[in-house]
Image (tube, rainbow, N blue to C red; front, side, top):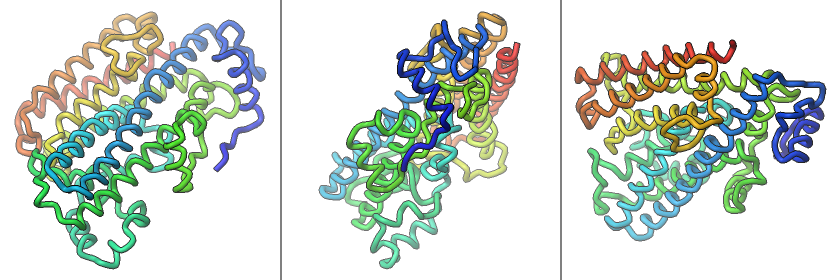
Length: 378
């Protein structure tokens, strides 16, 4: 598919190309003149895309392609050594996915990629029915994308290769399950390639990724990286630079709320004791921690950042309200500490008192993030 942009957006893009990046010394484009505050936030928005979102999605796509190759090898040669390769790649790719949940707005939301690849709990009854149906398994490679979300993605694959926190023995893996795993892994890799392309642009992903996307005829219609970088200009979904910056914080608030109230809270309160993420791999607490780490990277301005970069929202907030910035960094540290202190595995310890402390820490973090968003409006 072709990308659709308004004429005015192309004008702004042309300005970027001619300058290398959006100029902050001469930011009059298409009748838009940015304030000094907007110029500062614009630089931060651009850094957020280039130093955080795109690197995370690139690595996610890279690892899910490797995961697919490992699953294909496992089907061909079903050994414990190949199971280990699959399980290791499942965990390493999932790390990037959980980090990316700090920005589920954009492609992950518009194209329903988040629910498609990360719905839990697994629908075990439906999966058994599928695996035992010759008719449904006959063309599984071409129909997997249309299955119930509770059957596919990370957790469909997780159930095939993990059992009670351990790599599943190769001898226990039926051929039909391995065939199913290949179909799921292929669909997962496609979804993750689409995420990268939808933020970086089809022209900026590898030929291999373009081939995967084009073969499925699922080229993204949008370039969310350009949309964020052009916030405030005609054609962008963010009508002001500030709204683009606020979206970054709102993405963080959304995942922190989900971690505290749903991922951890639903089992802990008894609302749904089966609502446990990654229960077969015993990876739940690592998932929660990675979600909060993704928030840290988003706010600190760079993948793997352990303190705020100059071009980051925390650095900007510090320049306006140092107390608010300190509250964010302190709440982040406290939240990570409480999550890491929960007894493992979560699936066997979800009612422990330390779980309640982690929920409280998530609530505290969201309170300071909400206050920090207000600082951007000053």
